[in-house]
Length: 136
Length: 104
Image (cartoon, rainbow over all chains, first blue to last red; front, side, top):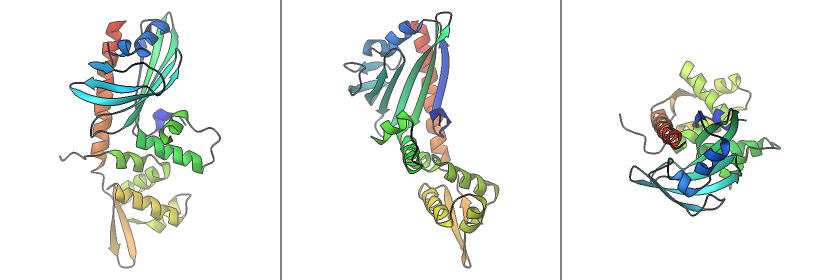
């Protein structure tokens, strides 16, 4: 099962005109994230378990870094006050000619939990990592 | 149009493929009974009853008693809140990715 096939998931894919290590620097460091993810990123590090706040348009969201796959993927969960908690996955791949493909998936945690429960009931040998995360 | 305050129950209701099938069938043929739905899908009547209860809890289905039968209809209004969440989240990512491109 691909996560972006889940109803409720938002998916964006874009090819960036920069090599993957240049993009990774903007994804895997709080100062890098602060240049594009939100107006303000208050996070000590982009490491699993790190938590803090990102503020966008004056609205703070609590954010926790869930998974990091060096050079390739960051998964974080976040929630605005009174908003819908969701999981965000940022994935980078080489797109050739020193360009980088970035895929963003944002999915409500509740959607992942239902998918995780279903995977358990179906005795699925390899449930999606994000679903396991959401169930944690 | 009143905004659904919390799209969570709708996302939970529609995260299951059987419930999505029930929604599709009720949209096409309003007034189906649980037995009729079970006849269309590879699950038991009891399972359908459970799925219908979850759809009703999320505000996506209503039940009408007609004699000894209970007929179900889709009530799609809560979908608006879930759609609004997706549209807003998508628009925010478009903005963020434009900012990211300007950094490279």
